[in-house]
Length: 411
Ligand SMILES: [Zn+2]
Image (cartoon, rainbow, N blue to C red):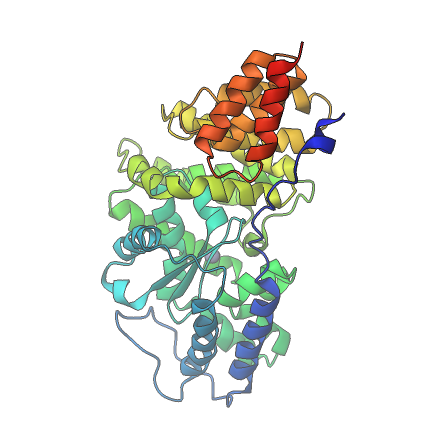
């Protein structure tokens, strides 16, 4: 009997994308509100960076833009995908606050449970950070850099700049295109990436302002090169060979990597604060869930690249803390892809994963089945027992107990 035929169904993977359709609808509504607001004369005056605590003047173009964003933000507050955990929010908001400095009180950070590398900034101070981005970062300097970039869009009033320009050319689609960030969440996930763009120049400016700010705070100047290097490797692994939606409008990743590496060179000899331990401690409770969500995308070439990268980087940093989790999910990605020698690789990774204390219970279950297939009954029984000890409420407990009994009585 094949293993697939006798195993109870797995618990279904989390479905973090389920919220997309309603979100798209309500954000469109907000957008409609913004577009329906009376069109006011575009100011010819240059757009200055926003001051701490500054709000748009009544009846201004900026007020019109904020109105739409405020509506969208209200919806985000009740979205099922919003991660409400106080500890995780406190940590990410704390880093955002540090980066935003005197603007701290103007920013609200929303963590949304979507397994994609993305973060965005609305002109009214609402920042979105996707769990897929938190999974892919390794330390606090990287988080600070990404948040610094998004904050720079706010401080430099990029949303207003794009909005004003689009209004002056009366291009409605272009108007939609420059309503950034919050709509980008829906737009990018809805496959409408082209409607959510900051200009390339704005992106460059945000990179520069963000970099200066985080390096000024004493963070590691190499953080940008690390983040973009990782992203470039991920892009290359994808058959779609397209950058992630929200980054589609950004300077291409290779160019961006070059720019940040060059900027970091100017700070050579000033290593700065990395904050790996603090970051890892804040993310560790979530990794199991986020790695499962990563695999639920079913883009295994990419997931293998992402997880293998994280696993190797942690090894290089001498951090053994997540090796069981990374190893198990990498093994799962290979097993599910099932090409060429993927099965053997998966088995090897699984054996390595269970040697680490943080291996999730499921790693023992998979290892037990693998050992049973290899006819190593004694080791399989031991692994099944370890699984049941680690997951005492497992739905398949009766089934596994029966399997253990069969293995014990088998000749
Ligand atoms: Zn940007």
